[in-house]
Image 1: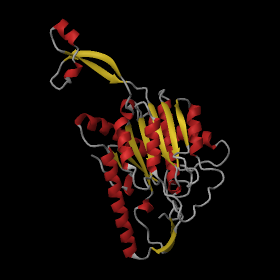
Image 2: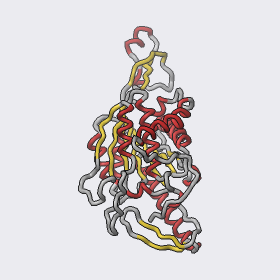
Image 3: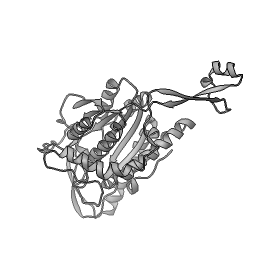
Image 4: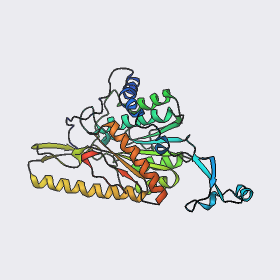
Length: 345
């Protein structure tokens, strides 16, 4: 169940509503977000993304911790001292965004809903990647009619130009005409459809961002785990504080964004608020356990979050992922401020 949008002091900016809004939004993000990040991400690009190949950069004497498979036997025989090859990862790669645009993504304060957070995150990260010559593509799910038979709405092939990023942002903006409310009993989000399409579409190893609130019918864990085995997967989980705890505001009407079902509740009832919080906590625990079992890194983005802070958390997540990969640890996780607790490995 979800409640009506509320007000907050979030720092993610309201989406423009005039013609050409995609270009204006991207320019605003380039000025207010990417410009601030430029000085903070210098030298960290290799931890931001993992490439698909290796380049030989140097030879040096073997040390006890080195992988014996990297020994260069020709040089070793010539110098009569074991030498190993030193590699760097190829920086050119493809990034894919698997985007859940189902009705529950529209929940949140006006101008700062989960969809606004999704749009800002994808726009900034796409621009950061394409400026380095990498390609970004996207798979869109849930924006069409809830009764649609097809698995996904559209697939945007990877490209590396600014015009391509503008096209991506344009497809993320809310439609000019509101989508009719779902009738009671409408279909729930089936996130496994989006993930299975990603499995079938992505042939080459890529960095994959699954951006969703993970409010979905069961069955998404297995395809996410299969995707994580083939690709470098980051699960970007969107959430709003009201999904975790209800305030004491009296009688309110809650509406399920997926089915359209409505229910009037009395939030003055402390017992009801405790039961709601407990159910939300149980769901949080099950969701995080599922993401951990799938082997995907997790980044949580809240509607009252700052986009720059979120991207800096993402950088920290990637650095911990590199260390975890080296030490064979469990996947890393980065939480979104006070609304969620850290679940780092």
